[in-house]
Each structure stands twice: as C-alpha cells, then as structure tokens.
Image 1: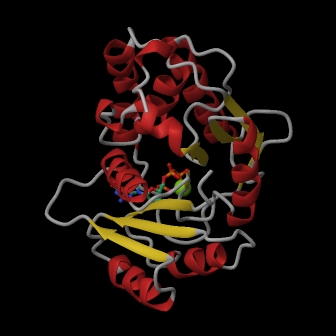
Image 2: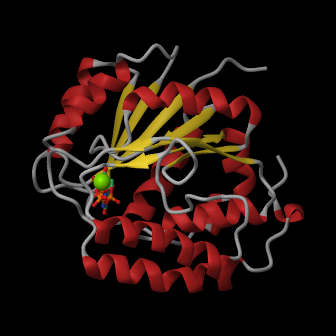
Length: 251
Ligand SMILES: Nc1nc2c(ncn2[C@@H]2O[C@H](COP(=O)(O)OP(=O)(O)OP(=O)(O)O)[C@@H](O)[C@H]2O)c(=O)[nH]1
Ligand SMILES: [Mg+2]
C-alpha cells in the first residue's frame, strides 16, 4: 500500500483576512505529509499574492492554483483543485472553507474516519453537531430547510447534512465518481457530489462538527446565489437519476 499523503483543498475568493491564519493552522496539525492547495479565483483583494507567500514559506507543502480569466465559481474551483491534488498523488482529499467555519482541528478526525468510510462528511445535523449559537431563528431554519429540501427532492436516505462543505474523500472514491460527471459551477456542487456518491453506493459516514460563523471577511452566499442553488437541485436529480453502483469508473 502506498504511503498516506493527504491533501486539503480550499477554494478562496476574497479571503485576504483569513488565508494566512488558515494555512498556518493547517500546517501546524500533527498530520504527517499533509499538503494544502488553495484554489483562488483571481480574488480582487490580493488573496492570491498572500497564497503565493504561504507557498514560498512552506515549499512543497502549500500550493496555490490561480484560476485567471475564467468564470469564477465554487464548483469549478473544487473540480480543478481535486484534479490537481489527484495528479500530485493525494491518497485522500479534505475539502473545506477558508473562513474558519470549518475548524482546522477537526481535519485529523475526518481523515481518521476514512479508514471505515469512502466519504466522511463533517455534519451539523447529527447528534453532537451544531451551528453557531449566535445564528438567529431565520438563519437556522433556512439552513435546516435547505437540507431537508435537497434530501427530499433527491430521495437521499442515511445522510443528514447534504449541503455541508467539510468533507474527506478517499482517492478511490473520487476516481470512481469520475469528476467529469460533475457539472455544478456554484454552491450546488456540494449537493451534486453527495448525490453522486450516494447513488454510486459509496459508504458515507457523518461526524458531528461545530460550525462557528465566519469572524473575518464577507460571505459570498447572497440570496440570488441561494435561490440558484435551490433550483439547480432539480437539474442534479435529472442528470444523475440513472447512476448505480455499477456506474462507478473502474480503477
Ligand atoms: N475559488 C472560489 N472560492 C469561492 C467562491 N465562492 C466562495 N468561495 C470560497 O468558498 C468558501 C465558502 O464561502 P462562504 O462565502 O464562506 O460561503 P458559505 O460558507 O457557504 O456561507 P456562509 O455561511 O455565509 O459563510 C470560502 O472559502 C470562499 O472563499 C468562488 O467563486 N471561487
Ligand atoms: Mg462561510
């Protein structure tokens, strides 16, 4: 068996207030041979240059992929980042946000759980999981409802947090999923990935996480972006409705 080489992939758009602290926190984790890739969509606030400085400070461990002159989008950035990490030999990939809503100290736990799972989801909606206590009623309701909505339309059973973006993937899972199947450009990417993994019969395990609110920088989740993601769930269902465990790409 090849030696473990986990990669963390983080998409960034205007995260100048967070990128350095996030890079340093991840590099300080007690995880051997951990690599980190930022995928920056040409952020106007200078995030890309800060990522370059981190890559220089941690040679061969921190990497940055600059997507320039291309339409931006969370899904596009993730697919490009996953391909980059797989080509570099990643044995597992953790995906997470740069705003500390996904806490770096949870990364070792997610990676360890991959021993018994094809996909591990850091979940706000299993016992022990929670969102920021400062969230008001409306925000809680919307987040909870978005999950129920997507799960119901897609008929997903056995997964509570289908919209969350803190996950660990086995290399073999991402290879079997075949990333060219994934078409989402924006936030519905998270739902599409859950649905495809579930339809292909991969073993999905949820671990409870605490999801604090971002402390620095601005959310990119505007109301039109949320509405678009909600409508696109129907497209995801249509596109992948026939997938079956036999549709996995052979190694
Ligand atoms: N590369 C890239 N990254 C993005 C894009 N949009 C968002 N991101 C990153 O995706 C992560 C999540 O974005 P947030 O704005 O925090 O959105 P969210 O966490 O879903 O929503 P909030 O709960 O409002 O924070 C962050 O690391 C962002 O910088 C994009 O178009 N391109
Ligand atoms: Mg956030």
